[in-house]
Image (cartoon, rainbow, N blue to C red):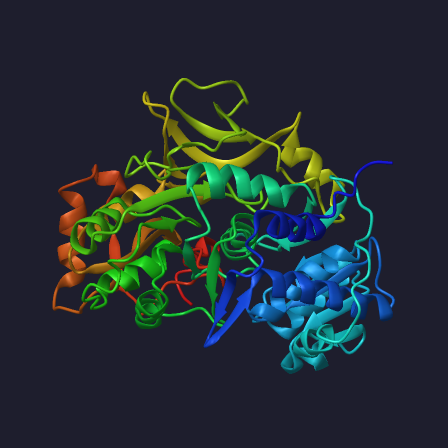
Length: 489
């Protein structure tokens, strides 16, 4: 008989054998949850799920705020051999119903505020599940194989309808070793804070996988913390690993830190490219070691990253151990320098839920087409040049808006910028920059056009600049470029 490959059982066994069961795993408000508590409660919660008739292969939608209850619920779903469908709890009711129908969930584990949204499905209060776990007997973990489905995460939908990405039981340990251990060198003394939440691939690895795989701990908040709260949490818990996205780092760079970040040994950025000027400011003014990386929901976590002791600012770093990368031209042949990034590795998703044709077109001979445009540098690092689906067409010329955005972001009065081709009153496509200013000053719009004109060729200079309060972003912080192209939000 094959050895049981259940990921929840493997993590519990690892904690016990490594001697960190009594160490803190999660810091939630004033509460401390140890590794042993989390795994024991997951065993009890699995018993509760079993009493609800949930078993191997069943889809269980999990839509709840980050917290100990979320972690316990996920591990419990894994223990019974079911498949956790990780969903943003802050989606609209219509979006929740769409995902519920798409995944054909047998049950929904959510907080009480969402009960009415899932009235047509077996509903379990996530906090009540945690309460019941204290007094419910732990049963044996379901027998699964390494490639049995473990969880589904939906893409964040930056360009359209989300897709359900299916990952297996083996993948958690792969994230923990390749990124957590080999790239970030996470150990039992580390304390992490992930601004990105666990329903997203980036936050899932940061806040669930890495602590449970390494014996370290993580600070959890039910909401996405702003800059001031991040500073407070870092100082209060002596956080030394911070995970966030460029938009959040922009806010952090504008805050009064007063040495609150001195305890950080590294800050990781992902989700979208980190503007070079922002990275330099964070490094030079705040003394933060910024580590940029790139990954995708399909890869589960990062496949190319800067790491501790191997950081090249302004690049995406090198391939993560175990991953291969290729730069290909438009015909799919290897490119010498610039091209589209293709990746292959052990933690690639198995398929898109209910979309076999899309799976076949995205996974080609074991390679994932990422739709990211990159440059392969002589030192082995990669530089991001934009997305193939982010390219703008102006006057018959195709260009990447990220280069222009980087120039705008380097201006001292610019906090964030997005550039898109927008139709003017003659229905002609013109470049327009949308800028979130650090402060509003008279004539800033014209000043920014002059700024870009002195640094870029004329066809890349925005015709107009519009000052806005914020840019349209997904719940995970990614820029919604299809909304930017409409010119209003």
